[in-house]
Length: 217
Ligand SMILES: C[S@@+](CC[C@H](N)C(=O)[O-])C[C@H]1O[C@@H](n2cnc3c(N)ncnc32)[C@H](O)[C@@H]1O
Image 1 (tube, rainbow, N blue to C red):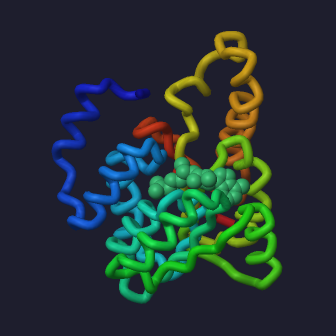
Image 2: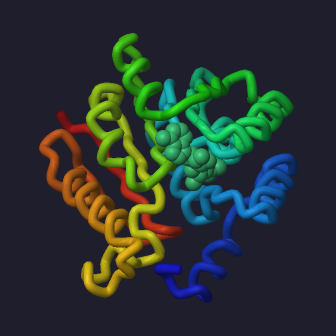
C-alpha cells in the first residue's frame, strides 16, 4: 500500500455505492484473488469518464470483466468499450459476466495476446479517445508504440499499477534480483510517458499507482 491504510480506508468510505451486480462481482473477484481495480482507481476513472465523455474506450487487460463493466456504468450512452484478455480461465468468467450485465452489449471482448490485437486494431485504422492499460506491467513499454497509434488527439491514456506498491521508487539495489527486470521496465515506461512530447502525464500515488496522460500532439 503506497498511501497510509487509514487514509485510504477513510477516502474509500466516501465512495458511492456500486450497482448491486458490480458489488457482487467485485466481492467474488477479490475472494478469488483476481487483481481488479481498487476503489480509489475506480473513482478516478469515473471522474475521468465524466470529464472526457469518451465515445470509444479501449482496455488492455479485462481479467473477469470488472473494470470494463464498471466503465460501462459511467460512460456516456453513445460510448462503446473494446477490452482484451488472453488467459482462458479469466476469459471464461469475463464472457459470462459481460453477457449477463445490463450494458454488456456495449462491450466487445477480444480474446488473445494484447500486442497482436493492438497491432491488428491499429492496422485496421481504429482509434480510441480513452485507453485504460491494466495488463502485464512488464509489457507496457512494448504496448506503448501501438497504443500511440490508437490514441486520438486529446485522448486519455490511463495506466494502472505503475508504482507496484512503491517498489518502483526504491533504488535498483533495494529490489530483489527476481523483481529487477520489472522494476527497470516500469521505470523506463514512467520516464518515457512523462517525457514524450506527444503526452502530458501525471503520476498519481493512489491505489497501486496510476498515470493519467492526455495526448497533446
Ligand atoms: C490486473 S488484471 C486486469 C484487471 C481488470 N482491468 C479489472 O480491473 O477488472 C490484468 C489482466 O491482463 C491480462 N493480460 C496480461 N498480459 C496480457 C496480454 N499480453 N494480452 C492480453 N491480456 C493480458 C491478465 O491475464 C490479467 O487478467
